[in-house]
Image 1 (spheres, rainbow, N blue to C red):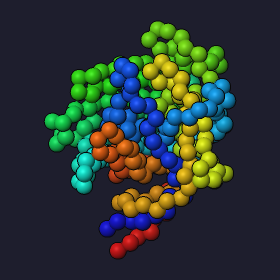
Image 2: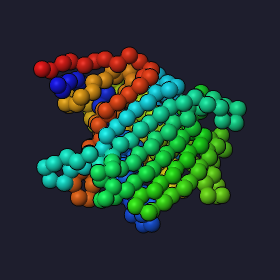
Image 3: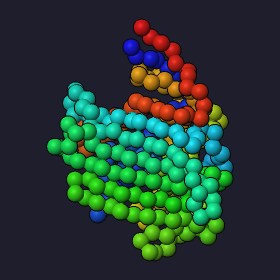
Length: 265
């Protein structure tokens, strides 16, 4: 039995980094899921912040676990391509309380003969400011590997990566912290078509991006939602050949009661 619900805070979630050049950004199982909020924008990086400097956390808590299933379509059949798991833990980092959020993605065993992926992304978000202090990425995609650690000093406007110092605008996010920050934006004050700009540091570059609010949409899924958790329920992403769909299939220890579902027999 499917459940039908109305998503009252639907956000357009699309990938914005094409992977040109050295190929360091690819549409892996995990990055497709993470790219849920990213869209290339033409905003001035120094002012592209707005809600990304003022939100407080009301949507997730210590111990939250989310499980997503990734499906690949090339024609008319959806194939289970992999799974992505997210976990949130409250920890101490250099004397500050942080949300340590981990995202791990890997291909399904039945799909490994096509392309084997095992990725792990971690972000350490300051509980008080909701800004990332540290970002760690371990990527293994068909033999292509990335091991990277980034520390951010927002007071100085600096990011340290690969033993180099880079200038970053105010309230800059990493690719994982941006997802959790976006869950705390008050979308009720936006109308369809509105864009919420922000900046992100990835692969030693600063990207000016935006979230586009597209309004309400009704979809079919086995899961329902309670809007105060602002959970991504479904992510659609086109790729070079075919398309990818990511569905929420499991959850645990949500901050707000789960509800808002209407049954359909």
